[in-house]
Amino acid sequence: MIRELLYSAARPKEMAALLKVKMASQLPKQEEALDVLAQTLSDRDFCYAALNKVSRSFAVVIQQLPQELRDPVCIFYLVLRGLDTVEDDMTIPAEKRVALLREFHAKCYDPNWNMENTGDSFDYRVLLQHFDKVNRTFLSLDMIYREVINEICYKMGNGMADFAEKKVESVADYDLYCHYVAGLVGHGLSGLFSASGYEDGSLRNELEISNSMGLFLQKTNIIRDYHEDLVANRSFWPVEIWGKYSPELNHFERYPHKKTSLAALNHMVTDALRHVPDVITYLRMLHNKDVFRFCAIPQVMAIATLAKVYNNPDVFTSNVKIRRGLAAKLMVYTKDMDAIYAAFRQFTFEILEKLDRNDPNYQLISQYLENISLATSELNFRPQLNKEQVLS
Ligand code: CA
Image (tube, rainbow, N blue to C red; front, top):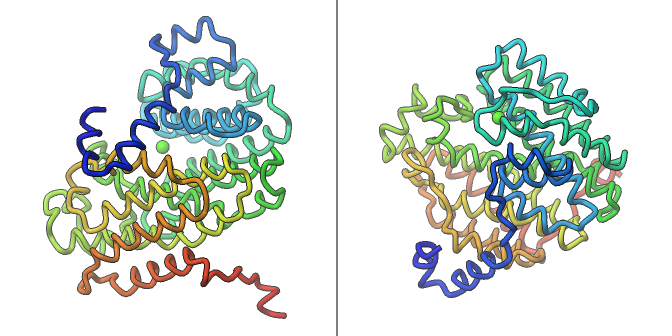
């Protein structure tokens, strides 16, 4: 905390925000290990304890949702975490892993199903070992929520299984993989928001822009995690993009300052920026202020991260993160569309200032930044016409 305060010392708004966020996020900390907690907690309490262990940041933001939505979103997260744990555990023989991914949605209806010795980390293993608790809590949800969660689990599991047998090579593959692991989360959340009545019933049908919400976040993580993923011997950067700049992906780590390395990185950022106008359109459709904040905060963090990683050689050798103070400020001030417009304008301006006319994607990224500035300027905002309207 002291270090973060020092980094933000010259920025009083960030200092104030850091302290505010620190106060607000004082979730009771469970010191005991998850396997010990599993012995005494009720099924539902175990779910929240597990959420707290596997993703503390998500456990904090979920507290901001309307009460009615917390359990469905918590269970949605844990079911998908279970699926992801299976996807990532390379010690399970491929054939068995693929079969399990395809069947996972059906296992969720079994109040006694769990799995021993699965997962790359202790908490994931305990989660899978006690998955019957997640399933029983899932079964206690209203049917409208269960249907949304299970449909997404079915589609994601099958998508992951498809990609267990092939690699991300083209940009189309990249978009499809990101759709399975993140775009579908967008679909599911829209479904849950609609089902709860806190948002319009029509939101669940906004598949394209819901998908973009997930893709923008996922692609930002994939770009930022270049080095971490390289070390772990995996990669999600599509060769159709990076192959234009180097014959080997690890070349960028060795020559982080080379023009071609930075051009590859900038190409990846350019590709991610294509989803921003959809993100703005989606956020504009939300009515409930808590749902809005839940959706909007990760999106402003993502654009801030892209502004930081654009043309930044450190991405190739380390884990680049935005200042905690900046993150806290975005968390505190992201309350309405005006804050969204301001944040997106500020970070696109930061990217604009870093542009180099000689970058091979200079024209394209300039166009995307222009589109974002149009989408974030209310004076220029015109509702998008759908096909019928254009034709009539
Ligand atoms: Ca995974």
